[in-house]
Amino acid sequence: MTAAELKASATRDPEPPAGASDAVRALWLTAADRWEDAHNVAQDMHTTMGSWIHALLHLIEGDVGNAGYWFSRAGKPAVGRGKIDEEWLKIAEAVLGQGK
Image (cartoon, rainbow, N blue to C red; front, top):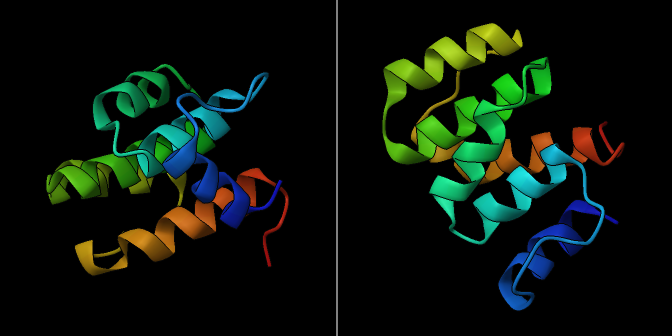
């Protein structure tokens, strides 16, 4: 699955792909505008990837300070609200093994 396919799935399918990892589920839920559900998944992911997704979610929420904390925990540079779509794509590509 590509990042584009994952995002498209979130607009047409009622639930994340069967057997999806927590990271894929959290990204799918984010793309489906199900912030609360995505946050619930991400906050239970005690990994660098979980922290990166968590950062993105707080950025979407508008809590830039909290997002900065989670970007730091993930070892990633903080980005501004104008970069949400780009950051989602970077994370999805990393999760799906398509990183550049």
